[in-house]
Structure formats: C-alpha cells, structure tokens
Length: 242
Image (cartoon, rainbow, N blue to C red; front, side):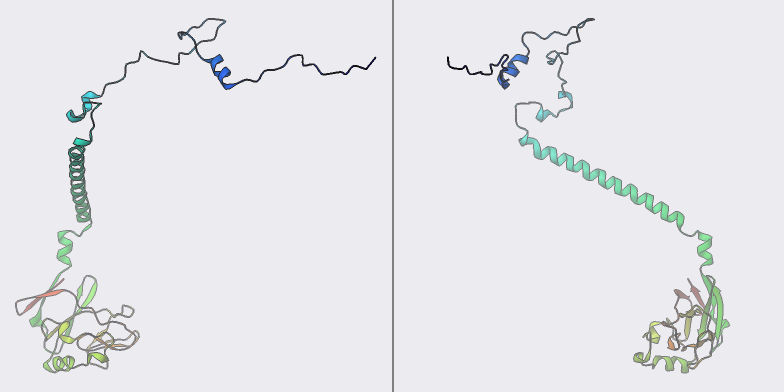
C-alpha cells in the first residue's frame, strides 16, 4: 500500500479581526444606564443630553442677537467702537504716566533754597579796569575780568585759524569790556592764574596751559577754551551768574 502523507491540521484557526467587526462589537446598543454595585464596576454615561446650554444673549449686542444672521453688516460699527475705546484708554494711560513721571522728576530736582545758592550776584563797580576778580560759585572759582580797550582790540583781531578751539571773542562775551569765565583748566581741572602767561590772560601752572584775555587756549596741553557760564546783566553795574 502507498504511504500516507502527514498534514498539519489546524485545530483552532483564529479569524482575523476586522475594524468593522471590532467597532460593531464594541458599539453601545440600547439606552445608556449608569449602574454600580459591589460586584459590578461603575458605568459612565458618554452622552449628556439633559445639560442646559448657557445662553449669552444678555451679553450680546442688539445687532448680533440672531445666530442665523450674518454679523458682517454691523462689523464696521463694532470695530469703530472698539477702536475708540482703545484710543481713549491709551490717551488716559499716557496722561497718567506723564503726571507720574513729572512728579518723580520734580522730586529729584533741587529745592528753591538750593537754586538760590546756585546763583551769584556781582557788583561790577568793585572791579577796576584791567583787573580780574575771583569768586566762588557752585564750588568752583569764577573769574570776572574788566578788560581794557587794548585787550578788547587785541582779542578781536586774533586769527581763528591759529586757535585750537576756534571761537571769536564776541561769541564769548555779552559786553566786550567784561569777560566771565569758570576758573577751571580744561586739561586736568587745575585753577589758572589770572593776568599771567604768554598771552596776558590766564596761565595754568600745573602743566603749562596758556589762555588769552578771552579765555581761549593758545598754548599747552589743554584741549578746550575756559568755560563761559550762563549769566545776565541787570543794569550797568550788576551781573547775575547762574
């Protein structure tokens, strides 16, 4: 007899699980009921059809009350109102910020008594012609020079091309016969000596800077002219510096 062939016979074939069958097998059928007991786990209802949807009609504008109607027709008016409110708020905020900053800066400024000390009143009749007097102003020496006619002509004729810090004499004075300067050398802050130097004005002995009778640097390491403070003549005999 012919030999028999042995074949593997599947005993428990596993059917493929299709998506349709999987979803249909797990889909909820019938009404959903929440139940709980000692031996049965609690069920959760997946659909809530008895919850009241909140109504915001009270907060809506009259022109957008109808949910089925388009709101494009009233968009310009609503945008204009929003822009107006934004601009008004911005202006009010800027004005409030300006007041706060102004008050803060005012609190940092000097008081009235301090400002009074920052000015000095000088009687010009006490200074003879050709002489220089020194005063203390804001903790610095202040030079007031009564120039002669020869000094006025000499300083007015100086060629600006020869100056390190070009400045005409008439630009540094309000009255040609009076020169008012801060007596601090522009090199390292020393105090110059009046009526001395190679140009008959001011001389700084620290490093040899020479200034003319207008306070302009003519020789030495100083880079700039002597500073001219703010001053004002009150009549013909009085000047207020500061």
